[in-house]
Length: 497
Image (cartoon, rainbow, N blue to C red; front, side):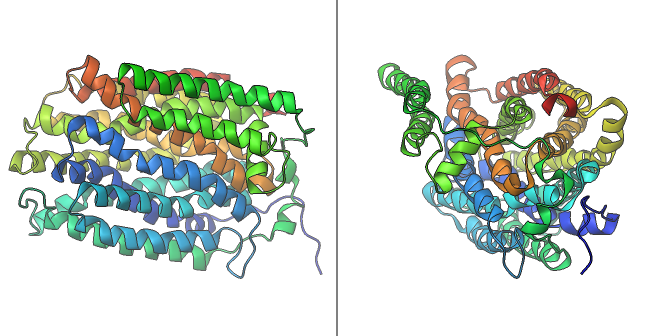
């Protein structure tokens, strides 16, 4: 029997292509969700300040699902491998949700289907992030995550354009009040098929390293978090109070000043984490919950700074996904009547805009690795986020909808960087045996800003901006500028060790 090499072998372009192709289907489904859910909610009677609250189901699902799936996939080994069973199971569930979504006749049913869809996609998506860290040597990981970014962009381009394409092919793009048009029905049906086929391609063309083989590679313990002594009861209680007290104060503020009820979700999240700290004795207790809490408390330094970068990056993205449709339909197409031709024309144009930024993202993904080698990954990320922030600002001053394609170029550059660079930086800072759970925990800092955005943006627009949705995009652009500055604080490889 030949000896196992200590360094992971480099993979060919074809092998990286095959292992990342499933992300084409994942993003196809996500793009249908992102581009259509505000339209579906408004068609079913949602008011402007209800949109963010209705969207909250999706990030809450990710918050709960991803770390658990990551923890489980780290400990799974079947005939299909370590991560691939989750790819396939999540895809099957998401396909069923996509088939059901356009048949929603009420807001509550649409919100439930969004929850099911997001949960199912997260079951597939989280192990995909760890999959690149498992399969590729450190020097190829930026290329691997950039390839995922390419497929994310490519899948999104087609998905965002699909309602417009189907409309031009003869499908009806208008319907009676409270009903969804034929173009959306067909889009979600096609999306389910594409998702399942793309995931199946990766599952059946890619093999995985067994867990014991992964542990023998040189990078398996690179910058790994060491074992930590169990925290004292007093320290656990103190940490729990640091989360419980803000939770109680926030809940009191919501009740006393009659703030948005969705802020109770933020208070509840803080209280739940305080309870988990106490229940698991700060992660000292065995079991999945204890291990996840322990890993969260002892995140590597690189991950802590990247968490802040992700927070502001994804706050901006969520603001853009929620409020681009109402912004473009009202500001550029001058209609908020969901049954009107002007509104639906504007909603389709948003699909074109989102397809444009996805296309630009797919093309920009190929430049990330060479640019990162030349000026460094942190500088590349800073540059990309600044370009994206300025681009979001510009939407507020553009009036011709065709010129909105220009800021989509900058948004695409920022999106490409967000999809690749943080994961490339993170994968070198965590051990192979915990790649899944740390990628899942990293998702907290994608989900929490979405919860914050979903809770406060509607309130902010109502209280300070006369319910004008374009100001949510301006706030989002500011978030990208802050994230760009914070990335300079992320340790480089030498500092992190």
